[in-house]
Picture (tube, rainbow, N blue to C red):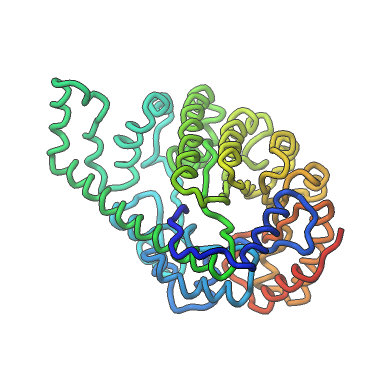
Length: 424
C-alpha cells in the first residue's frame, strides 16, 4: 500500500487541523469533536460510477476522480485511496494462481477479489524448516513459481553458491529461456507496480492538498498471517498450530525478523510515512485459543507493532472478529498513546475498561445501517457509539466493515453527527 507522495503541497490549515485532531485522538487527549473517517474500499467506485473495480485494479489513476469526489462531498477527517485494491496488471502479467479477480476468473467486473485457500500452490508442512533456513531462496525457488505461472523458471535459479570461480558455473541456468523469461516477467511486473505506486501517491498528494491526511500510508502483516494468508493457507496454518507446532515456531521466528526489518526499511525509504494498518486474519477467538495466541501470534505481531512505533509511525491494529478472550493481552502490552485498535464484534464495555485513556479505539458504526437503514437509524447509532466509546478520550469513529455500499444521505448523517455531537 506504500506509494510515492507526488503532488504534495505545503500543508494548509485544514490539513493541520485534521492532523492534530487525529494525533490527539490517538494520544487519548481531550478533543472538541470526534475524528471520523470510516475505512472505505470500493465505495467511491460504486457511488460515483464511471469506472469499474476491474478498471481500477488495472490502473489506479482511473480511481482519481471518484475518490476526489467522495472526499469533496463528505469531508472525512482522513483520506483513503484505492491502494488496498489488488494490482490487476501485475497479477495478469505474472499469471497469478492463488487470487481470483474481476474480469478474469470472476465475470462481474465490479466484484471483489478472492484469495483461494487450497493445498495446491502453498508450502507443505515439511518445508517450514527449509523456509527458516533460507527465506529468500525458499520464496524465490518454491513459492513464487507456485503462485505465479510466469515465474516457473525461478525453480532453476539459485544465488546461494555464486561466490567463487567454480561457483560461477551456477550462473548457467540464468541463460536458459525459462529463467530469462521469469526475470523478464518480474521486471515487467515491477514496472507495473511502480506505475500503480506513483498513481496512488499522486492521488494521496492531491487529497493532502485538499486538507486530508492519509488514513493509511502502508499495510503491514502479522508474521503468523504471512503463512496464514499466502505461504501455507488459512486452514493449513490453523491445523499446523496443533500438528507441527515446533516447525511453525521456528519459521515464525525467522519471519518476524524479516517483517521487522522490512518495516524499518520502508520507513527509512519513505520518511513521510505515518499511518499503517495490521489486518489480523487468524488470531480471533473462534479460530485460536488464548494460549495459542500468546505462543504463535502475539509475539511476532507485537514486535512488528513496536517496530512501527519505533520508526515514528502509528499502527492501527484491525481485529477482524471477536478478541474478547485476548483483549487484556493487547491492553497489557501495547504502549499508551501510540496506536489504534479497531474492534469488530468485540465487547466494547470490556474494551473501554481495559483501554480507557491508554489506547485509542476505533469502530462503533454498523455498516449495514449505512447501506440499508434510515438517516434516523444512523444518527441514533452514531450518538450511541460516541456515548459509549468516547468518554475518557481516544475514540476514532469507524464502521464494523470496510465500507463498499452506503446511501449518501446516511453518510452525510454520520459525518454531521460526528462533527456536532460529543459527550465526555
